[in-house]
Length: 118
Length: 106
Image 1: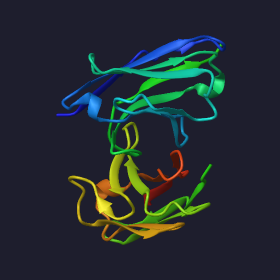
Image 2: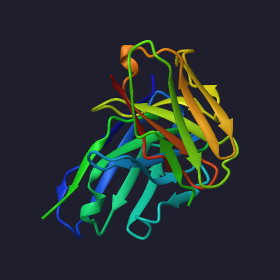
Image 3: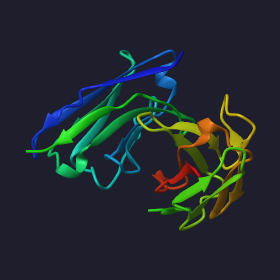
Image 4: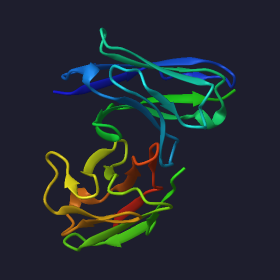
């Protein structure tokens, strides 16, 4: 069965960096777009970034452009999010998400909490 | 950026009642609209994609309709497990979510 397991969430100071990881299993990882989607405490959902399966097409939300970098290693069935220059407003649960086609999330990880605070 | 506006913000209904949720886009998204359900402490779950297609394993009481800028998610008869927050999401231009509609027990 499809499994997405995130790790790397932590408490970090403003201006700091963090790298999130997502280990995928139960499907052919390279066949799918993958995304990071976040949810601030008590708030709605925000798409952060996505990356295509093989061609490496990448898009970012304006709110993270220039600070966050998405990447994947298809040999390791893993997705990553490098987050630099973190701000208080980046505090959220970050979900790793598998896409069906492009732009439809059919599987979600359980989420990892990133807290940016001094 | 395409803005999705969901209404109402909160819907108070009893089990067995019909729920009608609305999602309006700031510009046409064709049929590239999905609906998700989220319960407290859980990740969202895909219900409907491309406006009217039920995802795998989703009960028939959930249905979606609409195209262009106006979309509706209908739950024909609410079950106790349906009380949750529902989000619409478009993939026509980048990807954005609506702000959510909470369906609560009356």
